[in-house]
Image (cartoon, rainbow, N blue to C red; front, side, top):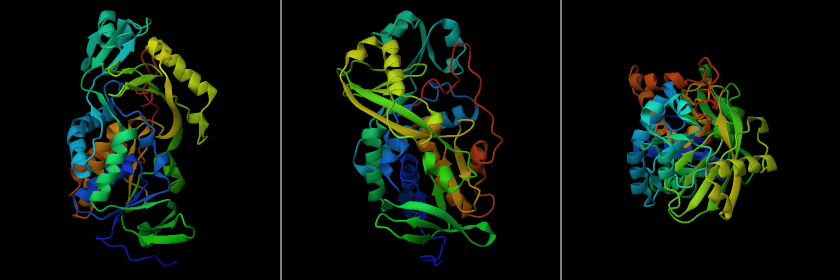
Length: 396
């Protein structure tokens, strides 16, 4: 098999996957002068096009390395968005609106892992923040530092245009079939099938695997599995709800134009099964009625589904992969939108440092260490009484 070209330090970095993570990394690399080619089978199936866009490290009750990574990304998001908007000329829909987490009582509220980061609310406070909230909720936490971004309608489009403006090359309708290695097991290229048919090869010394839930198909040693999620949206009155509401099993994300995104089921047993299910839609409707009864009367707009990339501990796989020259940016589960900014920064810095000699990447390596692909995996932390596990109340 003959490769089209010979890998070199000046050859394009291949981004395997054109979803949010692939676009974010491609944009970051292009901004620092690297040539980038994005290979994508079908960008519309990426989780970035179906997620609700919550920026919620505190509201989701993250802890340990995930909380630290989420907080670091949250701090970077305003500047990251500003760069994307400057390069694309399009708005990304960033909205630092704050997130309310409701509870059945004060004891449940105080047991929440991130309670020290939030403002405690009693029933009257809940009603002020979320007018019309269901009667079952007696306490809450307000995380003013958390927010949302309109990834589905704005961020993804802006990132695509920003990448094009910086010279990123796209091959849409291209399915990567195999990673090719040479002497010493180092990456030397990829074998792929293009939309017009036929198999081809591309030489590459550096590639980033950002295929989301499909990542394990290229590297079966990666512990990544699909977690199906169903969602819906309703059209409410403009400004009818200002805060995101993050309830157990259901969340409500209000856009500025009155659109209300309702999500999401979590169905790891579904694999890659397409389509909506009566059970999933019933779950969303019941959660909506419990959180905001009046919204159940608003006209429905859309219903959709997608696949999150899950891992055994719900933490992403970041950094060097099992093949030299392959970098990982996958397994973000519910937190892909939140972690896109920090993932793009760290992976771009790690790739740059890898070509700069021994020791150049030590600071980044330290940050990436908890997320290495071959770490010892443990199950997510146990939940406080009456709760789903931290980070699994709902699935942004």
